[in-house]
Image 1 (tube, one colour):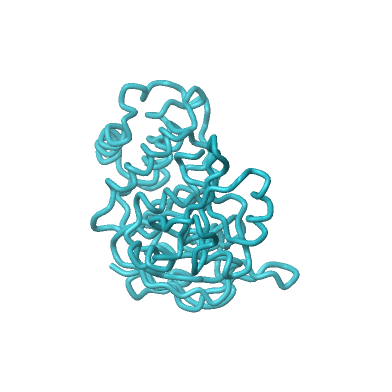
Image 2 (tube, rainbow, N blue to C red):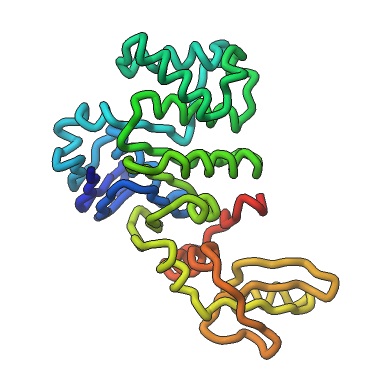
Length: 301
């Protein structure tokens, strides 16, 4: 099983490129596609889901060009888009029956899969409740259930945890991790901790271009011995932010504890700190000309 992305680009009107010269080879596992808003993640997801065609380049699914033979991929594809809508008056049972019919599942297979998936996403007890009464997290779990109806070999989830509270976010991440095995899962997000908790392979993108394709361990190695913690008075915070790359702050009674990414200690009182995914992400994105203002982990909200 292999998904091969060769020099893929997508051009929009006005000579704007949503993607440019994107190259990637995927095998079974969980790929965390990470980047700020506007990085091109959703554009790539729409191309992989055969919703739109690339302007240039090819995507091969087990050697077959998906632009020429999209049904070969669609038969084994599960997709949860960023904007996933439900029919509020349908129950979970009715909605999944409807989606199973669209996917071409026969009645016997449909009943079996719906029972299995409602159990998997922990919604069996509310299967008769209208979806309009579901919380955001419950709707996302129904979304992943519909994406799994055909037991896909390729599962794409695009920004699935946006708007969820921390508890629902952790539950959803655990669910995605449990689905790993003999399938390719692409988890696209700008939330660093989602990738940290689930991914076996990490791709960083920005401005439509691939910046890095690496393992979680190698990503952390980029900022090894380059992260410092430093307590300074509150009135010096603005100046420190202008001078250093700051990945975090924590208010304390004795001042502000700053987390700084730098090749050497920013101050004699600064102490080395263990690197995190957020440190590495911020370092790479800032090096490529953009410091995101949406950098956060699920625990911070």
